[in-house]
Image (tube, rainbow, N blue to C red; front, side, top):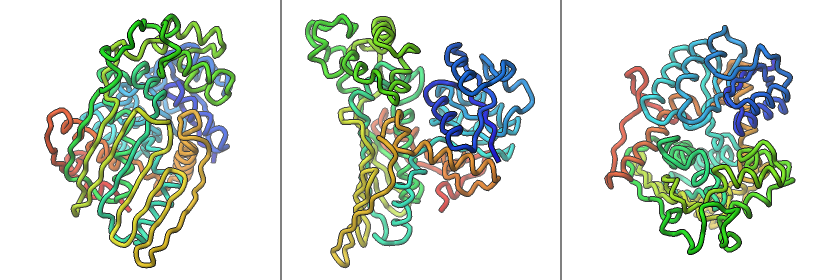
Length: 430
């Protein structure tokens, strides 16, 4: 069965998922809703959509009887709730970009709509679906390293990626999107719960906006990189960051495709001269954190520490797991297992397709997510979907609790998530 798809939001993520579905041969785009006329027309042309299946507003699409088996929701973060609930009421299976919603109340509405209508809801926590994560989970559940006692986990966001998305880009201002922890690192908080296999009970957090502030602006710097006299000595020069991506077929789609529809030298220069991506990173427009640490305690006293930091290369996550019979070090590509009993070490290499960036589909994670989603829709068997409404609501609640802890300087206790007043007693099913 080929799954028919409606795409809500034809930006980088929506278009990327549409192309993945098409390339797998098991998904077919039949409708698009996108307010940007260029992006809307580009997707209609790419997938041969008739005018009757092309919409400037998602409400036009949901005003009609169901047009497809499933819908991919890749609208801005704060515009997930209404379309998700409307589509669930119409019976669409849903692939929803993370985060579910900017706050707990809206996320609960989405989860409730999916459960009430018995529609498949898959949230794009792509890290769960990689061969690396699946192999790591198998090693842990086999008992090879005994009981997990503690975990260290690092997300190296990447210096230029952070400047692109979280200083100059769509997620720079929390009021316009969400906190950095929810927008970017909800992946990691969710993944930790998935790997540890237990619900979090207490959380604390520390962090803030350290570097990308007006007081750190270099002497003589101007507000635009294209006219800045110190641009050539600035690591965060937009000119230097983006020019290296010209003529690269992968990076022309992202990040260059976010800046401009004209990915030429002229188009890039115009975008940096006039648009937000040419602003000085020290202009003071942004307010989300550039570093954060989250400390977690899970059922049974298991502990974990998570660090998100901007000042790195853009790379795969790094994790160290400490068990009673062994330990594991993982870098997103390979897994090194140390067995205490025999004092032996084994290195397991996993399949990785490309780099960790969104341009490369997060090293194949996006492809695996799409494969699982389309298979579940086609067969009606949801057992391969790890990031459904209950699980995702539970992990999002940990993120919101961590943000409360960071802002108040407290340790926040977590209670079980609820849908329709019923507590989720197994938020991390095996």
